[in-house]
Length: 427
Ligand code: S3P
Image (cartoon, rainbow, N blue to C red; front, side, top):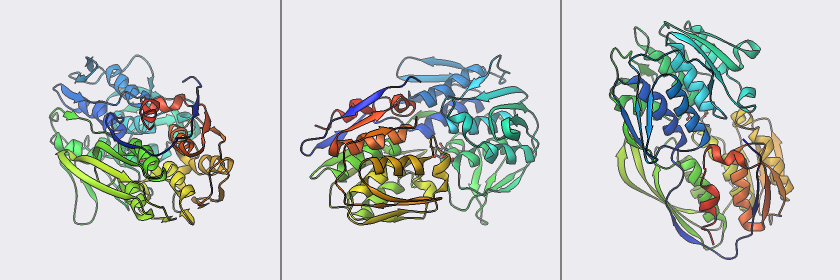
């Protein structure tokens, strides 16, 4: 990743726009690359996210023996008859999802695998997956006793489990589901809040049997034969689209239609918060492929401060962008119970509040969140992205109000390669 800077000009006037070509969903694209390995037939993927994170997951599928055919539009992934031991390390780049889900998948496969990533990913905690995986027999090692990548996995037979996760994390859940389907008998996974459930929906669509039972546990039944292949057009990513939702919500008299997003309820909570703050939001479901898909229309209205302390896993990725709306809104806004923000691509509590501070916004920082004193006129500043795509894009949106210089924006390519192109449409 090379460093790049971005200059954002203040927008003169309002905009009204229908936005197509929003980056495809990152979570679903990662899973397409990985889950295609669980079939014995070619999976057909349209609209795969061509961001660095998900292309890294696709490359790893190739290193594990899959044939990847890509005509620039459709990607066909033909799995090998047996996943092979790669002759090189598996580089997940910047992607926590890539590393944690592959750790679960590879723990149950015979062979030796090394998962690594860029300097940011190598500093993120992996114990949340390596601990439960080790407790069911996976042989995993890494720095800090298996907490930091590079991780070495010697895959093999795993035991079934009954695990209550201390964190609501789709990455942990998915890693354990991928390990659980390889077991001999059923396994159980419990989380306090249902985290994004693409793994369950997609694997069930492929013929697996994973469901929430009457005790509120996710029951994971072993798969005894290869799954059906995927045939999917990946919807647009609501967390990427959310930057533009915030743009429409903070620029007076603006309106945006965000096309073809996943409307999975575990993914659109940030839009509900924006609605609670006063923006007008309309949801239009148009189809259902593994999950509901459709458009979200956002219209500017005066914004009020809000408290965000529940359903945090459903809006964790959108909190940096939501914080820009909080800075513009009248009154105070508070984010609580969000200590997970500290271990994302950057420490997002610190990178959000300190950058807001540079824009003249008053704040209080807590261990698990922050308070933003809204209603200030934002000032142009020089923002450090900390190599974090969502910080770079959130402050680019703030720049529409006051101009902004953002340092180190190459990270935007991890999830939203055409972000600046779409941003230039807001004239
Ligand atoms: C993701 C889960 C979330 C989210 C990340 C993508 C996924 O992480 O923040 O961007 O695709 O499973 P956690 O599971 O760690 O909360």
